[in-house]
Length: 336
Image (cartoon, rainbow, N blue to C red; front, side, top):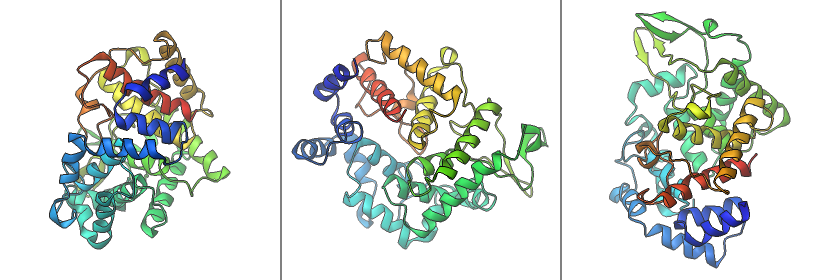
């Protein structure tokens, strides 16, 4: 069924899905077909719009973390399959290199607070943007990878959430000296490779297993003096959901999280995650290889720094929705 589905996707899906199947799942080299698909996807209206965000100065006057900013732009272009050597992506990285303070546009002081306390702020987000583009040998990327690993290592030292959180003015906040992984910790490790030693693999897998054990994790804020800052907890609060009870919005977060976990290589070694993949395979089998559940939410289509997974132009037909969700399923299974 998988071969038949891939054949159909290569015949009828959008250029981005076809390109990414050929390069990421089938492992084809950059050939004439890939060049053609690259030209086609670059002509899509959504891609052209994002390319226009860089303006005439190569992103230097752009926002960083926010709507129509560098982070959202690079994430979208890479997800759509735009080659990482594209001038717009190169210009974004160069702007981040030449304008150090640019990373605080759109995130401000909270970005610095989260970095200082080990929760992944502006510095880690910058590292993730470079990782999206396949670059991890920059000094600040290497430094943030160490911080991401330290975040997962910290989890191993606790046994319950009471050890890390307490009440503050009717809100739950992290206790002093706690480190905790955000979605950017997960993204950074998923899109880089140099950290991947057997020892680090085991440690990260144990950390993720602890997150599974502690799930569902409540929303916990970071307290800096009297300032409350929300860490990037998107898709990081329930690593062991019941797939039969998830809302459409939860499905979007599930696909996002599971794809990152698959890229890290954590799915096989953690029983609860393995069960989720097995359930996904059952859903695909019921659809004869396709993800045909009527899962639809604006967060799939609305691209930003957190949301957005749909590569098809729209989901006005069930087939386009099935194309996108089946492709995401194939990515997860490919790394399983």
